[in-house]
Amino acid sequence: MARVNASTLTELSQHFSTKMSQNMVDYVTDVVFKWSRYIFTWRQGKQQYGYCTHCKLEFKTNGLKHNKRSKCPECHSSCTVKASGLSRKYMVDVAYFVYYEKSLLNANAIVARGIYVARDYSQDFRKTETVFKVVALYVFEPGNSKMISRYAYYDPSDPDGMGLVGYWEQRKTVRSQVNTAMKNVASYCSYDSIKDAVKGTPFQYSTWESYKDRDMVEFFDLYAKYPCIEYLTKLGMKELVTAKLGGYQTHGAIHWRGSSLSSVLRLPKRAIKEVVAQKISSATLRLYQLSFKDKSNFSLKEIKDMNYNLHVSEVQKILKYTTFRKMHAYVQKQYQRKNANKRYRAAYQVLHTWRDYINDCVELEMDLRQDSILFPSDLHKAHQDTIAKVKSQADALLNEKIRRRAKSLENYRFEANGFILRPAQDANEVIREGNALHHCVGRYAKSYGNGRTNIFVIRKTSNPDDPFYTMEVKGNRIIQTYGFKHCLPNKEVKAFIDAFEQEKLTVKQNKKKKGEAA
Image 1 (cartoon, helix red, strand yellow):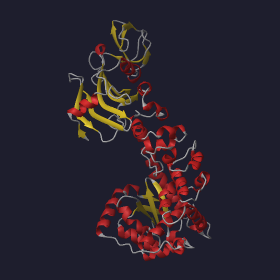
Image 2 (cartoon, rainbow, N blue to C red; image 1 turned 90 degrees about the horizontal axis):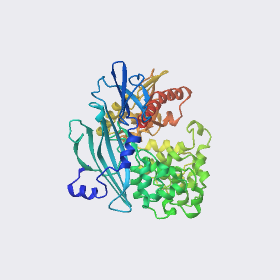
Image 3 (tube, helix red, strand yellow; image 1 turned 180 degrees about the vertical axis):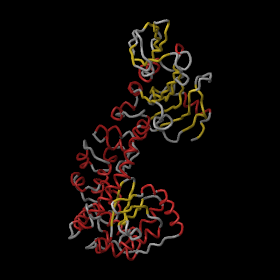
Image 4 (tube, helix red, strand yellow; image 1 turned 90 degrees about the vertical axis):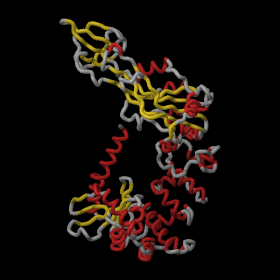
């Protein structure tokens, strides 16, 4: 972030009104601070009186109780009752809202103001007024978006009613304040103001109504850059836009700056009909595109049935050397081999083995243009041979990296039912693990050290130093677990892994989701 200079601030300010419109004031009163309505009570003799902060009228009461809800007899507002004689030293209500308007400078642009508001009841409750302070300015023009922001806090001693820290700062990217600077403040967005602001501008076609979330600033930023959002949404492909908005991986499935539907979807016109109006993920779309790219021409149903959605990177790695149709046929052939169920619980696991085998071949400078090398009759056996040939060397720096990583992963250590799971301690252990169990975990040492994956070892408590099973975990998801010569976990080990996942991974995910929701 950089401090906004005077000329930039002046230029940006020309898009905005200098006043709070009556509609904006009414929105704060009727929506943002609807919960900030009180009846303050006091007694004169035996009679209790009340004062409503909304209609600003006094009235006799029949006896209201502190902190209970009651309707004002004058304006009929639902209010919280407060005994005026009790301490109100810290009774200040604050909130944040985003309000949209038309740009005063560009007829094709819309603007938004992020406004921090406060109502101070700590002094004379009869004189409480709403204090406004603009803390974020957004300008959305076709092809361009800008945002500046500053920090605000309530300060009753400040002549302006608010204290400011720092200066207006230019943001490199447009972002919502709701989950950042204002994450601990009640936040609102006026959707009615959006309806009025977008009329007569290119943004009226943005389909924003389908994405009502938080304060909409990230949506309008995305639409300003990628107008194709309009027809993706209208064609029933909202999931692709939602993934982009959420910052999730889209696998390069969408050419966001494309000028036609065919270029946006990276598909020939004859294939577009099959994906329109379908709830399709970016991973499925990318796989569908790849099948057309090499003329394998699988149907969308066939792509979905393959269940490769979580393994797009493995597919792309393998497709450097063959076609989609040949790849799929080979995966099925290996999965259906005799005794394959001892090594693979699902066909996609063949992809992982094949990818690692290809990596070995590249390192060993083997000619993958030869079908006998690229498509070995027994992939498992061929992989065991390349593992034996690849010499994984651990250097001191990598050892140190892994030691630091292992220390940071200690909270995942787990023990139950005669088994122990812990992070691999250094590169030498990772390599020894692979050599002892005749699998390729040694190739993962560098990725483990650099934080791209996590490697854990499973031991019997009776033999804590003997390699038994090795597990790879990414993002709280178990990727693979193998024992001697890539054997899958037996019943007892599988039960132990399920218990570990429930205790150490599922709980963490639930906590994360709860935090995100908050």
